[in-house]
Length: 113
Image (tube, rainbow, N blue to C red; front, top):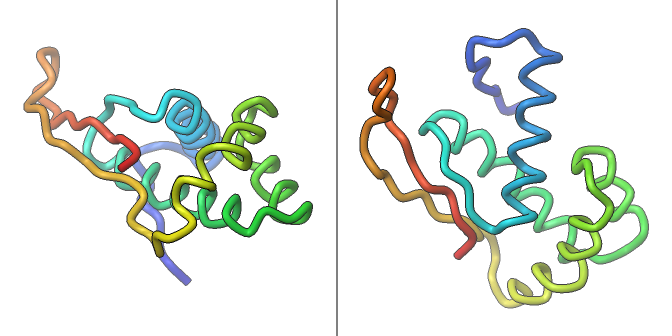
């Protein structure tokens, strides 16, 4: 069982935040966030893309339990999964962009390869 970072949040708030980050990431293909949040988002998003590559109804329903928008799931299964049929994992990349101005938290850009 893989441990998950707590990110300083209660379970329900952490789950809601990660659902929002993964949904936005799959919707736009790119997000800007902190390093630790990006690493957690990357773990989940790669699992969603792997499920989408399977392409069956059960996989679609599993993704729909986590991703909040049906349009994003449709795009994921129709367009994104077909781009990665030959690739076995490693669908995302993280670029460091320096510290955030307010609190100097290390910021990154998480994007699809």
